[in-house]
Image 1 (cartoon, helix red, strand yellow):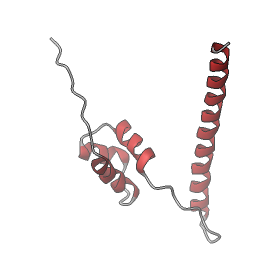
Image 2 (spheres, one colour):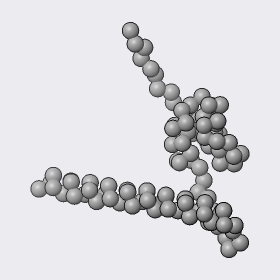
Image 3 (cartoon, rainbow, N blue to C red):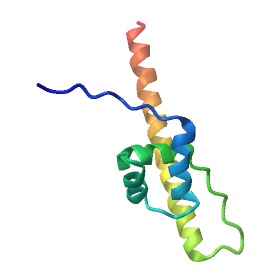
Image 4 (tube, rainbow, N blue to C red):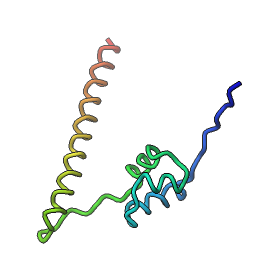
Length: 99
C-alpha cells in the first residue's frame, strides 16, 4: 500500500530566511536547501520570487560586475520575450474560440 503524501505549507517568513542566506550570506542553493530540508528546485522558485532585484552597475563597476549584470539582463529579456510570445498565442487561441 502506498502512503498518501501531504503537501507541506511554508509561511513567507520561513521562505525568506533561506533566500536571505543565498542572497546576503553567499550560501549555495543546494547547501541551503539541504540545511532547510527542502528540494533545491523549490528553493530556486522561492529565490526567483523573493530575492531583491540587484541594483544596476555604476560607472566604476568592474568587468566581472558588468558581465554578471549583462547575464542577468539577458535572462530577464529572454523571459520577457517568452512571456510575450505566450500571451500572443493565448490571445490568438481565445480569439478563435470566440468566433
